[in-house]
Length: 368
Ligand code: OSB
Ligand code: MG
Image 1: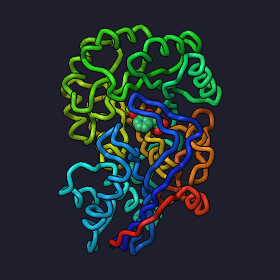
Image 2: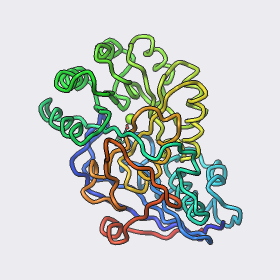
Image 3: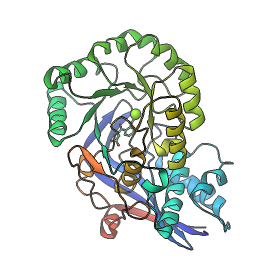
């Protein structure tokens, strides 16, 4: 394959409600959609950066800049391009994994569409539907939280994840357990809001039989998580700290995590995500598919990934309606707590042109 160019769509999609985490509140989803044009046809990529560098160092305008100035030009002129060649071809550029992942996703989609092969088939999916959880933001009050959680359980979500931060941790967990019982699969995500000095507070979550606590300490503090794991009973899951299969292997060896959240954007793409799945499986460590409030494009690929055999916990692969009143693809709809794995060529979904046009604030063409 040869890359002819990439059309970067700057997209701003209103969320159905504000989404509050320990690092900030989102009311719209501002990300990049890439139309990757090759000599065998086009493919679609999604760059899952947030607008500000608060979840990780990347941010949306920075991703557009590195794509335009360094990443797309690094693929230019090659005649042997395919999905697997993207990450190695971009290795000289440090970091910027979400931007690299978006480009890899678009090239892989073009390749697979041309070959008539699905993401699911390519990645090694073994299920035709995946169980879904939902990530519930920090709220202003406990009653408001209980209403939200009750609504999601009524819709059929099979696992609840509560966003936590100091001052919003034990009480919301206790309230959800008291109202909805011990049968609910429940976990929490701190997005780095604690320090090792908070171990005693985090240990107060022990009695609630949580599946896991996600990323309590800062991104670079892998060793701190290993220390914390000795002080709390809740299994520790890493999100922000894991940016590659090598990181995952090291964190597992150190005892820093017993579960891994796999987010393709965070780790540089779906192929590296699959390598993390493989490393974790070799260690008997369960993984689950995280989310970055993706549109239907990223969701299609995430659901394919989540259908691999080692994804044994429900993911943050919620239905389109949990995020958007109108998605840019045909919506993903929850059925019996599951989403169907797309089976068509490539992602198996396409943006609806009029929908994409409505939410696109700017496009730019970067020649290959
Ligand atoms: O830490 O998992 C996270 C959303 C944006 C950035 C980081 C995270 C999240 C979520 C939502 O928790 C997951 C989703 O439903 O897409
Ligand atoms: Mg997380």
